[in-house]
Length: 204
View 1 (cartoon, rainbow, N blue to C red):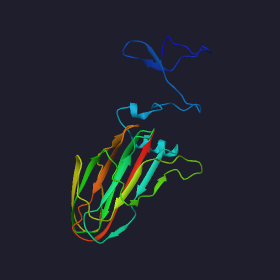
View 2 (view 1 turned 30 degrees about the horizontal axis):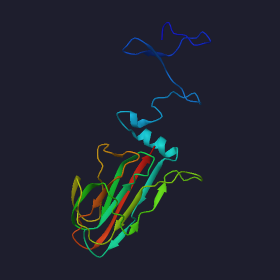
View 3 (view 1 turned 180 degrees about the horizontal axis):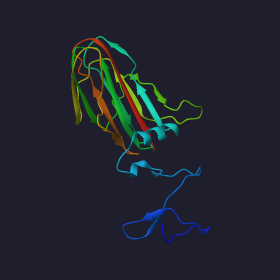
View 4 (view 1 turned 120 degrees about the horizontal axis):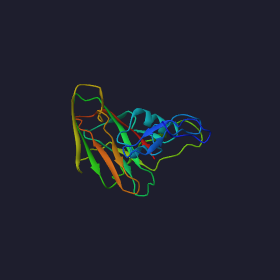
């Protein structure tokens, strides 16, 4: 950047802002070029690299029902961040598996936790000692549950033993810190069978 100098007299690397003011490049403690801010929620996109960085920092989580065998149709899975959560929650993956031939799944928003009888185990995706835990509550019901709440998306599927990622083309849901918000997956299974729902998110 011509005309701008470091304290040692070398040329300063950077560029000019639209206002004409100089802006130096920033580096982290290891000398690596910073290309994102510390809080990526301030940026217009969240990329796979951002997600991997949060996972490496111990801020990525996974919850799943596991493979569940149910004796009836129309189960439900809830993902809920309580108002007591001091972290923003960005849900970036919602994956469904089911064994019925035809199903019309329904994903809806929730502002109250249904707290179904069965807990989904939550794991930090950095498998190391001392990593953070999450206060998100992930639960599911094996009994039939009627769909309710603001409709986010519908996912009709035809076929046996299918797996589907419902968040396509980089879709995400952001639940801000200090607010009670969540999402419920209402499974449109037409008969008894097997299902699983897996959710992945980062917290910051």
